[in-house]
Image (tube, rainbow, N blue to C red; front, side, top):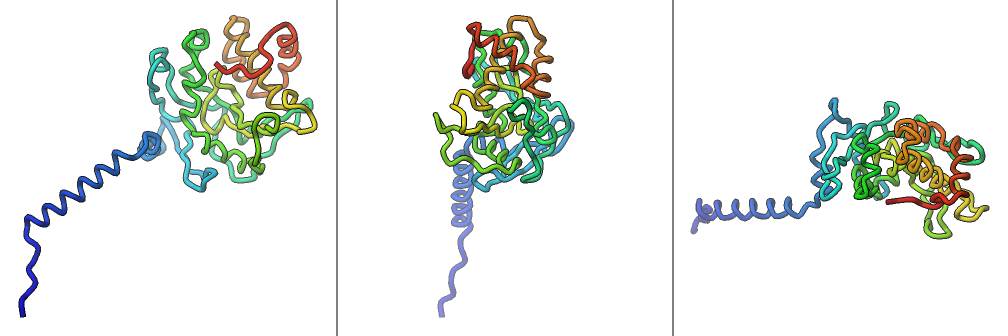
Amino acid sequence: MRMARSPTPGLLISVLLVVIVLVATLRRSESPRQQRLSTHAPASETGRHYGAANQSGQDGVFGQAEKAQPLGGFCETIGVTCSSVYFAQWVPPDAASCSVVMKSGYQLPDPRCTPGGIDPSVTVDTLRDPRWRTGCIRNCQTSESEKHIAYAFYNLPRPPVNSGADQVCELDHLVPLELGGADGMGNIWPECGSTRVVLNERSFKIKDRVENYLADEVKAGRMPISEAQHGIADDWTQYLEAANRYCDSGGRCGRGRR
């Protein structure tokens, strides 16, 4: 009987090289966002990261105070980075543990679940810079799909149709990005409005008016940025009367992204 030959050393080396090349190819094909998520540091003084199921059932990573990461292009040239500093200690709440609060007929988020926060790299000078765009920090810390976990926090169903005249909810930054609000989950909540009123009179559209008013007040030097950021986080409805006067006098009544 002929005995089976053992693999030669040369053949084993060839197989090993093929495996190494395949692994390297797979790592290069990983998306930049996947690489960023997979390389987050463990809990430390500069940041704590928490896993939570997003809308697709995957694990999402949310930072309480994520270490600033520079963005590309003109955003980096004007000193904008991606980080969150919350106004109160925050950890991801349990599902269905959050409830909205009604004030003056409009919704406020649960302060335990959505304390609000800022990106400290965005200053008054940043807001006044003509190159500034909210796109510099939009979705820089949590993706659109990750933000949908806020519906579960507040025990609200995700609207199956939610655009145009049929929009009933907005995954809103409590401190808006145009005021230097954080993109982390401690600053995100599902703000929903009654379908008994037209779109522009729903809660999230009225809050847009307040956001525009405050941003213009800050840029004009009539209000400190910290006062505006903390004020809108505490109770955005306190500015309704002033925002309505601002709108009636020709201010930006609608959504004011830039």
